[in-house]
Amino acid sequence: DGGITQSPKYLFRKEGQNVTLSCEQNLNHDAMYWYRQDPGQGLRLIYYSQIVNDFQKGDIAEGYSVSREKKESFPLTVTSAQKNPTAFYLCASSIVGQGSNQPQHFGDGTRLSIL
Amino acid sequence: QKEVEQNSGPLSVPEGAIASLNCTYSDRVSQSFFWYRQYSGKSPELIMSIYSNGDKEDGRFTAQLNKASQYVSLLIRDSQPSDSATYLCAVNVRGSTLGRLYFGRGTQLTVWP
Figure (cartoon, rainbow over the protein chains, first blue to last red):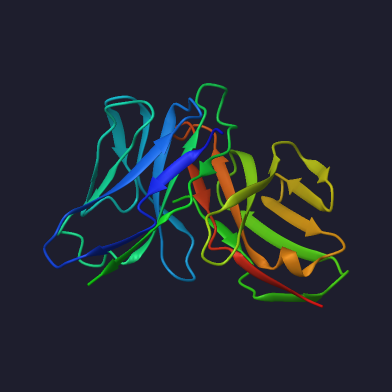
């Protein structure tokens, strides 16, 4: 089955620790995105990537880093510089190249909490 | 600043009623519009896409777009308790980075039996 796989489902971070959230897709989508969602809030864009080895900051990139070494994978690292990392993290992907009309499809999310 | 605004809710309707969810956007060159449904604790699920002025129907769902008024809505007919969720409006802007969506904060819908 085609889809987007995020792991782990739950993650706990200690103070001063970096943690990495995994996102893998087998939809052959070019573009991938990371969002953060806080309770009662909409989605805020952290980073996005349209092609391998290239990515752009979104609206709240501070304290996060990403890589895009393979088309299928777009891991997100939450660094110790992110002082309030507790949130629901969502990875999404979409087709690029047919104008700007393509919707994004989401993985199941990773819930990150501080210990 | 591109903004997407949704009626804050929560919206509560009885089973069988029509639920009406509204969304306005600030950028006149917005081109593509999407409605996502998000159940509590789950990820958003795409339920409707609309690109042209007018209505688009899919089962019990109807999306309505009015670009002149910068307004997009979602109607849910014969609402069911299983429709209880948060509905997110998302807008893609022509000229923005391809694929980038701007999301509203969502409207929480409760359908009571």
